[in-house]
Image 1 (cartoon, rainbow, N blue to C red):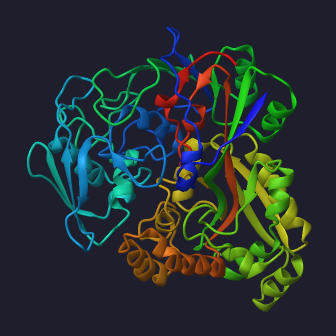
Image 2: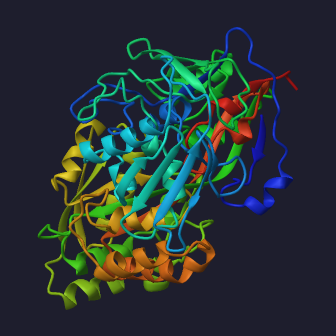
Image 3: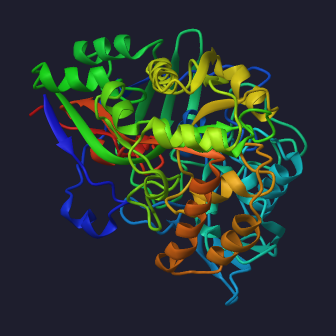
Length: 529
């Protein structure tokens, strides 16, 4: 076993030059086989798993990022988007309200249809028109008008200044779809997709647990593709995935690797497997239904913030493969501030009791915590058992926990059926705005009724006017302090990223971006060490 610790380029662009990219030759005839515990099914909650207007989770984006094109994309190193389907893009005014892109020449979809600016216009209008609550429409909702002024020119007029708009164009929410294939007012059902990205999705068999990708010979973009074929193999659990990796049946082990497995991969010698560790920007947090009779009481939420011991959580549940998180904005992202630690300090029941008694809250506080059983990994259940024990152990709470499958969980959470519940967030782009705006704007990702006018009407618009993102730290710091004071959400931990691979696989250090999305094109096959 060789463990490699990597500084993620999006977090530390200045150090990126110190990393040596694994080059890699083309994969052999069998292709590269990547294991994952992700699964895909067509259901009421996920009617179109790979439709850009419908899907907003990292597992679907793992497929979409590799098969669709966007005007821009995040680079291998650094945090500023670079060109993909576009040849050049930029704001045309000093207010950051109008954005213009010129498309590359010779772009085509996988079905042979020409791709031009009118397809970009159609794609944006489509996602805004469908306005699917479970989809990523919020990322593009700041667009007032979009117009293809020629076959290669596309102009966006924004409702308000937004310096983060280029980042949003680099997300799968802005995937370009074929206007001749995709309906303007509905989804492409099932697993079908027509894109222009680096790979073609040849087939996906959910029963056999396999998806097959081949290199798109007509891809025109800035990526260098290191292989010809990739098979994505779905496993029911991480144990069976690890067994296949050790046996050589798969080449790469991605989502999700449990903390115990990371320890095992480190402690059980196997010179044929490399484990790569990277700083991560994934976060986990509790969401409170602020309309609920119990969770809606600020005193109850603040008392929980006083009690929850994040250090114990990451030690006892995650074996230190995560870090305690004291803000929605994780460390490593410009603007991060430890607001919850500054407000509450080390955990303890004394201050929590004072808060509840001063507010005349009946003790113990009865509360249900809900989590999803099959979306964030098998350790989630243990995490919520730990939270339950911490809260009930204080003598101030009487907490029950309940697990719900993901296909019901997301819909029921949006409908306000839970008092308090757990969520994970994989950033759409590496900027503090993406940890604040999705949760506190109107029509936010959480469907939360919590409204702080200072965050929504002043701080978010103010920070979006600033092109130099370093200068936004003060505004985002203030927003984090407000969240720590009101506690509409309770940050828990920030994850590290791990990926394991056979030692003849190259490019593993670059295979996960800052949003934990898998970049299949980086993987190649070399010689064993």
